[in-house]
Amino acid sequence: KQEVTQIPAALSVPEGENLVLNCSFTDSAIYNLQWFRQDPGKGLTSLLLIQSSQREQTSGRLNASLDKSSGRSTLYIAASQPGDSATYLCAVGTARQLTFGSGTQLTVLP
Amino acid sequence: DADVTQTPRNRITKTGKRIMLECSQTKGHDRMYWYRQDPGLGLRLIYYSFDVKDINKGEISDGYSVSRQAQAKFSLSLESAIPNQTALYFCATSLAGPGNTIYFGEGSWLTVV
Image 1 (spheres, rainbow over the protein chains, first blue to last red):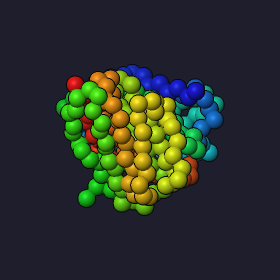
Image 2: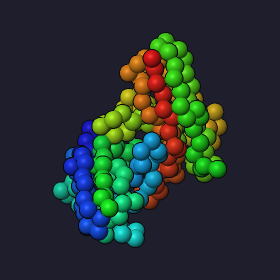
Image 3: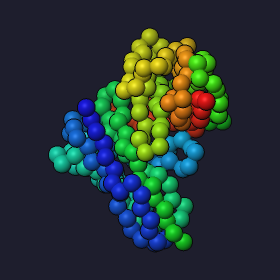
């Protein structure tokens, strides 16, 4: 059974700092890996999707990497802003379903 | 209008009552999913459907049932609600293929008292 872990559970940083969120998974036979953002009481918004054949994806200030052999992914956020405050979840996909981590709650302080 | 719409958005119900959560999508996706989110536990898959005739149990299907009435509609039922089914429920849709992301509704808060 795939298990997905995100550490730390919560992170607080000052505005402008670059930061890295971590995601690890136990089964490397994956289809893709996705990073999502969730604002309080809201649904999930997809940020980046990395297919199993890819090593990284970039969108604006966000960069996600994937290392299947070590079972790890990172989400790098450059020049963080208060508007980046949210919970970030990673999810590992097979052909049929996604398995989610429990998320990292990020607070960016002005 | 949202691409993935869930109704109701909030519901309080009593133990033992039947409750249905409905989901409709305008994205034209074949695949639809129901997830449950509990604090600190991430999202867990309840049921998923790859087309109208293909419905599958997820990780935590006990106590739930689903119906795929049309390509665009997928409903989740709690036949006899219990307090530990109090949670935030999400419907989601996607296309097949590793390059296709999944789209979520805004969620339905369900409280069982």
